[in-house]
Image (cartoon, rainbow, N blue to C red; front, top):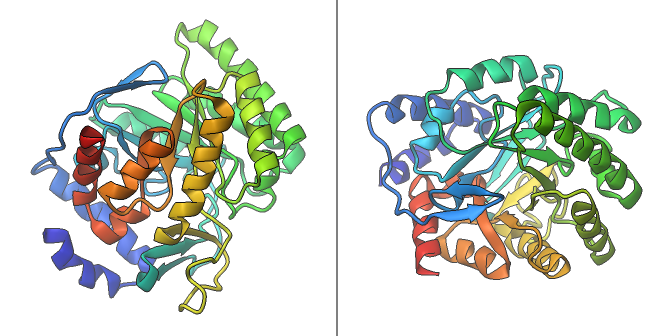
Length: 334
């Protein structure tokens, strides 16, 4: 109810300003009360989740608002994307609302404080729930050296994370999606998997790895990704990131802006990739559904398509914190 009253004010502000203001306000409210979300325990990747509804990476890029996000009732929180070195991201403006379509276009470009400052923020958080850390490469790291950045970040965040997500699907870092292609993906995951085994031996704990993929994949790419995650023993796949397609927003203000489209218009596209991966993997590797979840029914669609967990981002902007409980309740009813 409160968010419905505040949303017109927030939507009157510049989107990135509203984003920062909302997160700061959430920090304040989190100290007063938490949000009651119905329990729906589920075991995925060897982790016991209190409920299957999580925060997607991208909202809290620098891990500065973990306690506030956890207070919304999420079963898990994913922060980042973080890169080895700090970087400002793409020039502003880089965030655009398309309210008629309940959609967002962003071209942030992995703006973040760098992994050392990021981990200092993680250490300050009081919450001790399930924390995913999403890692990427710096914008100026050549693609043939990308694995170095992912390995560097994995080594840095390993002991702070419940699980680590390898993000190769943002459309806002030039060339990044090329890492989804068969040869490049096999080489990258090989390096990452070997590093994880070394770190598991070193720390006595095997941290699960997830791979985040795009909604714009064809059937051949999906088959190649399924084969690669099997070969390199990834623990889950997140389907999906934002889309370069503009289906469903044609003719709307900001529809031609460069960047990744999220929200209601990509729901079917993201679910198609999710379902195709579920078929290709045959239940061997769990899936996390993301993309276009703006209601409990949308979450149920992801679960029906093969997801064990779901993640929210754009839906929170349009629906507010009530969406978390609605999706958790949908999981209970399903």
